[in-house]
Length: 309
Image (cartoon, rainbow, N blue to C red):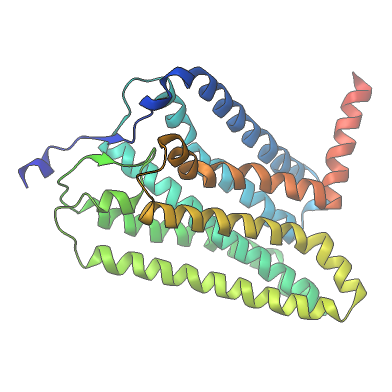
């Protein structure tokens, strides 16, 4: 118990088994991180500066890209440093800050995906009242809540983890998460069981809402060729991104809690970071390729620059 008061650093799951490939992995990781910034910034800048894209669907997409940059900022800079370092440690405050950033980014992603589902539901199932429902004021409130609520919930969760007395300092992962920090506690508190259970239940309700909205959408689109076309154009990218997000999140959730130590460390590290690699990189690409307005706008800008050169 005395050791709990002197923990100032956490050790992260090491990268010693890939010592001979550090430079190669560093280069590939840096390239992926630069690509994440490039594709997300392209969407963000396009939506902000093109007034034709100042519609709910594109505004929500812009927020999702901003959130992707926020979430990856909590992981990649530290991971890149670790790839070139002989020791893999993180400060006590840095570990909790990283956990807060990653958790709040994930939950904000869920909230934004729910808003995008709601927007598509109203647009296709209730098109006559779409402009009355999705007003600028309501959109602003929805976006504000979609950021504020996850931050508040994750702040409460992080603070409850901070109150634990820790009897260990090794995090068996390449980044910090509240669950693994909580596993180092000398004893579990009621709050650290109730708060995560509430958060899981709360965001499970989000998933149920998205599932319900898509069941309604599919039912409406089956009866109308026009709605089917609208679904393929505007809902398909969201549906694909939703599948990628849920798959990666469930994969990480199951692995974090039930992962096998018999797997190679390289494979363990990939499974730990796949959520921070696949959705932030592929989601903007999917929207940029499928959504006609964004694709045309980006193409026109690139052609204009090419002609100028």
